[in-house]
Image (cartoon, rainbow, N blue to C red; front, side, top):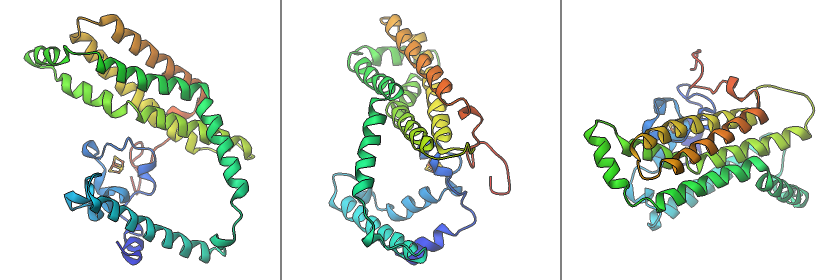
Length: 252
Ligand code: SF4
């Protein structure tokens, strides 16, 4: 997509600004695709199935083309703001970013969230009877596949959003003031939503998985502890208004 088309699309009033920042990235299930610039761009840019296949050269060509266009657009905007990207001193920024990366990685919340992702992986690896449980649940009209899909979708997403929230918190501490809304609260909110939905999905699994009830209960308890810890660390997260999802306004 060339820069002019990109600019035109970005200025389109039908899109809700920043809607994709606090969604769960599950576009297939999203009610707001028509209001999302991100979705619209990927539909236009990656309409050819080959450009969606990570093993296909077209995918990488498309990605580098999009990257090039975005960088040019960024340079253009920076110039308008009087900033020359080529003369900026990045050395200090890189050191600072490395220190923050390490702080985020070692933060207790992030370690716990990562442990949840690993536990899910281990649980599924060991579940050879899952197929039979799924068939048995289907006979009772329960879609166990859907519960599995939900758990799998959020398995790594929770950790990614918790990490983003923690990073935001660290960066916010460097700034003065106590402004709201904060990006860290928005990230924590979508992490909490993902945790809530995952707990619901695990509860469905629990009802139909007879050979490892304790294992499932342990995972639910672990996730519930993570939920409480996120709520404690980000007490304003639940009241964060996500554009397009939590409000009805002129644009929502
Ligand atoms: S807002 Fe909806 S359509 Fe846009 S990226 Fe998020 S999930 Fe996908």
